[in-house]
Image (cartoon, rainbow, N blue to C red; front, side, top):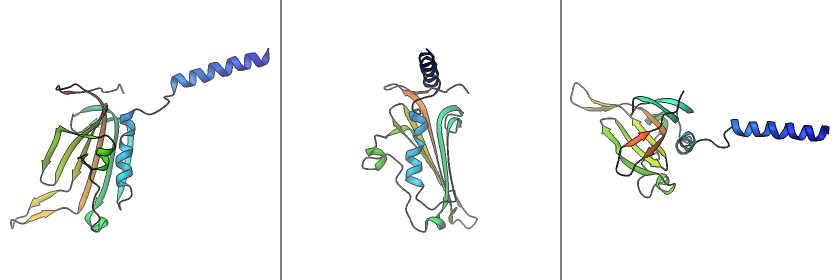
Length: 169
């Protein structure tokens, strides 16, 4: 009788644990891992990653997924190239199933962003290396390079606008 009661309690506790603990992370929460793996081997000043709710720079709203930031410099890289994070055909990201989303592309002096999606996940890759024209009219560029990635859970409708699914905080 005790054994039966023990087994029933174990089954109940195990069932409750399964219902309250996700068996795997959401795809948007894991998407930053791809970018961290590509950037981590490079010499850098800092690199951080976090998952969960965050404020999206592009959408100016709360979102759910992950974000990562790497700060490095031309001096630290010492001529070592940055990996291609565009998801263009032939790149590692393209081979992994990521596709460029032209709705989310912007470029300017020293900054740029490119959007890419895989399934229900949209990732925005921001590159920042500020540039300016000095008083003498010469082009100048900061030594610091910042790469920021935001990956969000979403739903894309064919031919329609992307609708984000923010999670309650």
